[in-house]
Amino acid sequence: MELKKIRIYVLVLTVLGILIAFLQLLKLNDISYFLETNNVSEISPPSLLLNYMFLILLVAIISSFFILLFFGLQDNNKVVVDVKIPEIIEEEFEEKVELNLEKVEQEIAKINKVLSPISDKTELFTKILQLWAKEFNIVQAIAYEKSEKDDFVLIAKYAYYIMDKEPRFKLSEGLPGQVAADKNMLYVNNVPDNYITVLSGLGSSSPKYFALLPIVKDDETVALIELAAFSDFSKYLKYYYEALNALLVKKL
Image 1 (cartoon, rainbow, N blue to C red):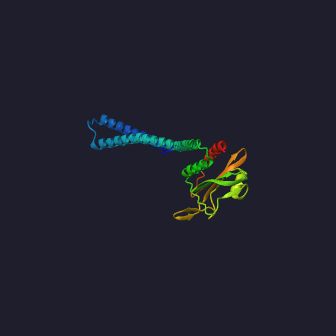
Image 2 (tube, one colour):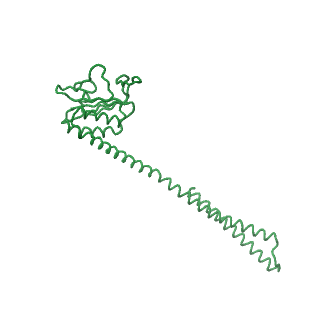
Image 3 (cartoon, rainbow, N blue to C red):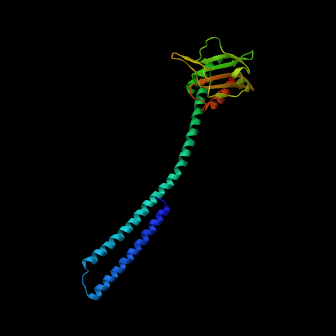
């Protein structure tokens, strides 16, 4: 209940209570005067009934006043609490976001711990693709390394079946070559049909989400990773990518 309405109700009840009390006082005075002047020892039943009615009404009004005041303040307090709820929810949401980022850092640390002892490049990239496939629900992944001929050749794969010959590309050639030349991560969330085909025992299908991650060392792309999935995996991808690039720079 609003504070303004409470004040109006209290004012009305107070005025009504004062008026009834004043009338009751006048009535009692009239009865006393009547008893004194007429030497009547008892008040007639109608007069007693009227007095009781006035007293009951007065008590009811006073009781209503306190009840209304009590519950009105309770309602008013509820309004104040409700106003604070969004702030609390927002604070909790921010804490959850921080916890999620903290969890990502912990997962990256675990992955780096697994990768750090590995020295063989093929084994290293194969393990990277396996770990990331589990982390991001990747359905297909390829890793390329820059060769001495300055072209990029396949060094590791995950769920990728070579039908003809191993894929390779040169700097600025095709989409992977352009990303390697630009040295910036690329994420595509609407891959055209049949651009990538995933083969399985159930048939084939085309993922809609695709990422190209260049590994840059001394301002030069030395490796590149392709990732494909059926669902959006862009959340936190840049954190994993930055950590991976920092780790691989020391090993390549």
